[in-house]
Length: 174
Image (cartoon, rainbow, N blue to C red):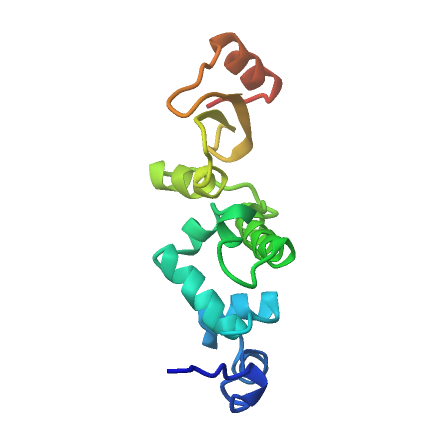
């Protein structure tokens, strides 16, 4: 049976990702539709949205998993060359950086969950172990977060003198 590709331009206007976003906002779009807008076109057999649905399915529809992909992972899909792959990788990196963006007011650390929220975007995609310190002032507000060392896949080394020096330079009290 010969399956004919239905081009996005042949879709009803209400179903086209760009038009849908204009009318209903970005929240109304699926991840595949948002990513389809980024890559612009699919391949000879599937639209950009269908291609992105298939790609997302291979990583359990998890954008965090997709964020760990490299160009070689995308290139196994017909129609995904370096340009489209890098566009998706750049968009996911921007999302990660947006989450990391410091607010104008220093964050206060009240519990371990606050530390998790602060470090998760930094560390969720790391291929190796890293040792970080969090410098706090007397009110438990973040002064700075610093990477002390980067190691292998199962460990890293952190020199106590380096940690203490950074804490003193940063005027951390906690």
